[in-house]
Length: 68
Image (tube, rainbow, N blue to C red; front, side, top):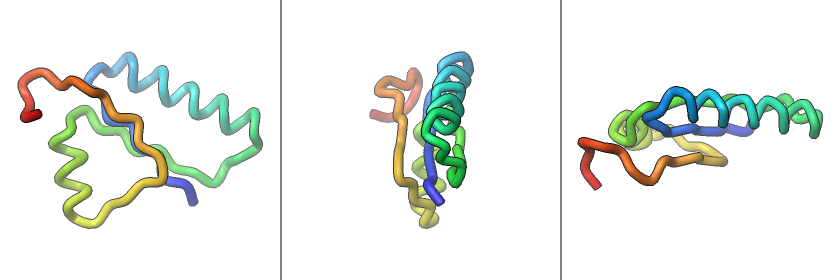
C-alpha cells in the first residue's frame, strides 16, 4: 500500500491536494493507497517519531507560529 501524507495548515489547500490525488487514482487505476492529513508540522513530526512512514509527502513550507 502506498502511504501519502498531506501536511498543510490551510484546509482549502489540503482538500484540493486530496482531490488531485483522487483524480490521479482514477486516471491511473491505482487504488491501493491511503492519505493521511495533518494541519501542522508538529503533528506530523510527532507521528513520524513514533515510526510512521510514508511513500510520498506533500509538505507546506511555511507554518505560522511553528518552529522552523
